[in-house]
Length: 190
Picture: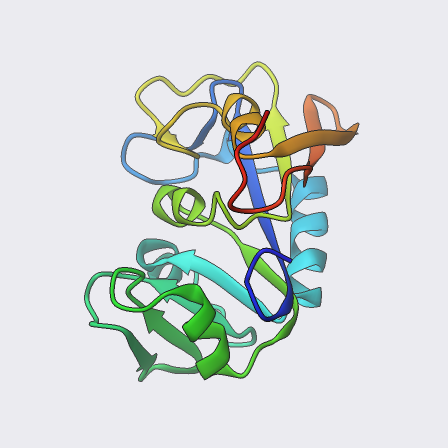
């Protein structure tokens, strides 16, 4: 529970290449990075979430009017409803912090699922209670779009107080690991 005053859990979800990329250089997810086993697990996690957080490009490319969504964008001052989707809200993190956002949205419990892109993953790094990371082994995407600007998630998470648990093969060549917060938010990792 890293959002003060709430019982909200913040959970990240990403599938990455061996070199930590979530998309190619154009921002598109290549077919080699898609995996049916991961997709089923991912969709089930989103179904259980109180709120899905994603970037503006992902929201535009993958409309999902059935889920409550928070869309990171600099095109609004603070919060603004998406006129095309009553369950979606545009949010500028520099205009209002996440504590106020969830209060305004009336969410004080459940799970917030952060699904990318890079800006969303970076922004929520201090807040993750857990992160579900799937890796497609042997796939390299030179000049791709990174999951985190600071590097491969496996190297970024320990510095943010997250530790790997429950690593398993979910499909041929696809490994999933659950990273769990071991250091309280706001405290330095040892």
